[in-house]
Picture 1: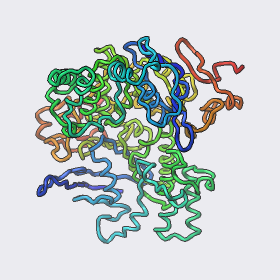
Picture 2 (picture 1 turned 180 degrees about the vertical axis):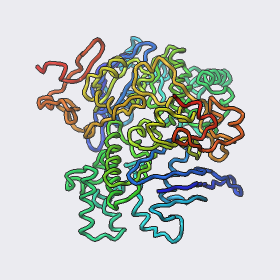
Picture 3 (picture 1 turned 30 degrees about the vertical axis):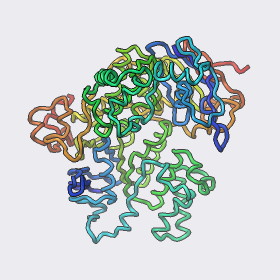
Length: 320
Length: 318
C-alpha cells in the first residue's frame, strides 16, 4: 500500500451560502509493506482516522495517489470489488460495528456471500478464521449473538470477518480503545500474529503511543493533518526528534507511585482547528522551542538519523 | 474524614439482581486522594453513586454506613442530605460531564448556580465567585460569559471542575475526569488536579480504569473487581508490590512507554454481576486458584501494614 501526497478535504457549510474547507489530511505520503505494521499516532483531529479511511477509499482524496499491489486504485479502471476484498477495516467499537440481529456465523459469512464464494469454501474459510482469532470451539460461538460475547470476543469476531476474505492490507482504527485494559494486549497480539502469519500490511491507528511501541514496526506521528515524524518505532521512541512527539510521550504516565509528587511536563493549548491551521509549522503556537522562523516557514519532512522529521531544529533533539 | 463500611448497592433489572457494589469498605483522610481502579462494570462508578446517594430508581438494596466528619450519612433524610451534604461537603465530577453542560446558559452562571440555590447568594456576588474559580482552574475569568459551544473540550472539563468546587467541598469524587480528552489535554487536567490538591487541602476519590493515571494523583489505591475491593493499600504497596493476582495481572497488562516489558493480558472476562457468588470471584481467571477457592469467599486479609488483599493466598482457609 503506497500513499502518495494524499490530501483529503471536507466541505462544511457555514450559513446558507458559504462553505469552509476542512483539511483533514493535508499532504501525507506513507508506504506500508506486506507483513508490516505501521502505527499512525495522533490526537483527535489530527487526521489519522481520515487517512485510514482514505487508504481504503472510504473517503476520496482531493489529490494524491493510492497505489495498491502495483495498481492505482483511484483510477476508474481498477476493479473495486477486488480492492474491497483485498483491503479490510477493523473498527473501533465492537459494540456498534456488529449487527445485533445477526449471529456470529451470519456476520462472518456475509462478506463471503457478497464476494460469491461457494458453500464449501465459505465453511472452510469461516472455521479457519475462527481458529485464527481463537474463538474455539467454533460450534460454541457460531450460533451466538453479539450481545452474548465480551468486548474482546466481539472484537475477535470483527477481525474474523476481515480475515475470511484473506486481505493483504488492513486498517485497524483504535481497535482496543473500547476494550478493557486487561484484554487489550490480547487483541493487539492477535492482530500482530495474523499480520505476520499471512504477510498482511497493517495500518494501526491509535492515540496511545505506548501500545504503538509494542505492536508496530514503524510509527508515524500526525499533527493537524500532517506527518511530523516517521521512522522505526524503537528509534523514534528512544529519541524523538520532533517537539510534538516529545510532548506526546511526556504526557503519558507509566504506573509509578512517585508520579503524584511531580507535575507532568505539558504543552499549553489544544490542537488547532483544521479549517484555519496556523501558518508556518502547525505546532508552533504550542511548541516550547518555536522561533520566528517556525511562524513563517513551514518545515518539510526531511531525513535525519534515518527517519523523517518535519522540524527546523530537529538536530538539537538528537541524543548522542 | 470519609469512612465507608460494608457498602452494598444492588440494582433490580429484568435479568435479576445486579450486585454492583457488594460489601465495599474504605476510608479517605483529609487531603488524601484515593484511587478506585477497575475495569468497566466492576462497580467503581456505582460506589461513587452510593456515597453521593444519587440512586437510580431500580435500587433493590442500599446499605452499609458512610460516615463523613463524624456524621453517619445513612441516618440523614433525603432533605438533610441534599441541603447539608451533597455539593456542600462533597461534590462530584461526572464522567462525560463536560458534554452535559447546558448549551443555552453561560458557563459562568452554570458554575454560580449552586451558590444561588444553596446559599441564597445574589447573582452578582456569585458571578464574582465564579470568576475566582475560573482563575483557580486556569481559565480566563471573562470566560464566564461564554457558552459551552465556545469552549474546547479541555476548557469545558475545567468548567465542570470549577462547578464541583463552587461550594468549597471537603471531598470531590472524580469519575473518569479525563477519559474523553486527548493525552496532552489529559496531562494538563491532571496537573490542575495536583495543584488543586496542594492548594486547597481537598480530598479526592479518583475513579479510573487506567492504573497509570491513578499513579499520577493517588496516595492510596483500591482495586475493584466484580463489585468488590480486592486490594487496598498505599500507591507504593499496590503498584510496586501488588498482592492480589488480579492487581498483579492488571499492572502487567499496562504497556510501559519507558520500560521494556511486553504487556500481558488476563484471559477470560469478568463475571456477570447477576450471578450469585460463593467463592473467590477472580477464581475462573486466576493462575493460582485451587479448587476449594471456588466455594469459599476470601475476606480482605491484611498482608502488610494498611495493605489488604481479598485472596486466600494470604490466609489460612479455616
